[in-house]
Structures are given as structure tokens and as C-alpha cells.
Length: 228
Image 1 (tube, rainbow, N blue to C red):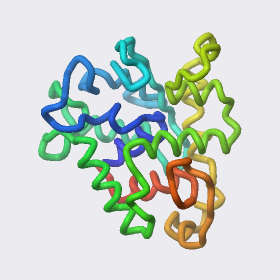
Image 2: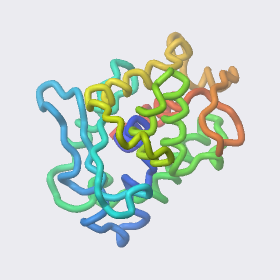
Image 3: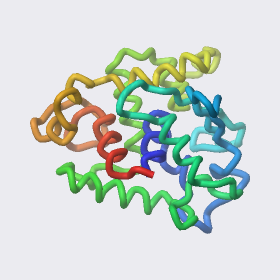
């Protein structure tokens, strides 16, 4: 589902924050569920807010709200989410479900990601559930987003002083457009696959063995192939 790929990248998510390890592992008190996602407007949506009840960096379950904004490019996290909400329905339980109503799990989605990447010639074994977050953080650094905003978006707590820095939601939402525009010169007049084949290289994350174009090319390919 393109809504998962776009949300994971633009929201700086680890896939485990969006998807349970299995259908049996879903817990309403900690897992992403219906009611945890809100859109600012039905007529002209500009922002999606995802409430994360608990994460790797929030073991006490304080919770946090992650904001994703419109991008104005072929990468469309807000409209992808709105399209998904239109077909999902209002059933309680796990937020992400497939067309048959079954819970989308992290292992299943990682497996699908790797299958898609393999078809476009990218070594799939180098990508895992944390690749979206690492790719988003690295792309943000490439476009000059300040460290405090990246740390806020990624929900990292390695520097205590950053917890005292307040970043407006509108500013966090505008970063989605900055991430999408990074590398648009490669997208214009050429496909992401063409850019990959020409060897356009930008650093995605330290866990990746090979260098590929910025992570939004990967999200673009996924979005084109995993339309809801």
C-alpha cells in the first residue's frame, strides 16, 4: 500500500511503529489503530496527524503526534492517506488492513517492499523496516533541515537539550514538501528507474551497503507499484 510507504518515509517512522509483527501481536493500547489518524480537512486536506501511543524511544508510553504535510510533487503522503481512509472503512482495530480486511504486518510489508525493489534492480536485501526512517533523516539533512527538527521528526533523544526546543506543527508539516523536492531534477524528464540505472548516488543510510538515489525515488517506485 502506497499509504504505508509514504507515511513511513515522510513521518520518519520505523515500520514497527505503524505495523504489528503479526495479527496476534496487535494491542489496542500500544499499536496504531483506527482513531489514531486524523486529517485536518476533508474538503482540502493539507496535513495528516498520526498519534503514536508508544515507540522504541518512548517505552513509558507517553505518546507523540507526528505530522505529515502536502508536498506538491508526485510524492503524495496526504492524498495517499486520504485515499486509503476512503477504502478502509471505520472498523476498529489495526489501522492498516489489506483489501480483504486482514491486518497488514511488518514482515509481510517488508517482504513486499523487497519484491518491488528487486523488480527495479535495487538489491532488496539491504532494505528493512528502519530504512524509511534512516532515508528520511538523511534526505532531510541533505536539504538543510536543522538538526533539532530532524531529531523531533525522528523522535530521537540522544541530546537532552533538544527536548526544550519547540517546533511548530506547521513547520514540521512543511518539511514533507522539502523532502519530496530533494532530487526533483533527477525526476524531471526521467523515471526513478532511469536515475537508478545511471548511478545517481546520494547517501541514504549508514546501514545500506550500496548508495542509491535519495530515498524519495524508492518511495516513488513503491507508490507507483503499490497504489491502494
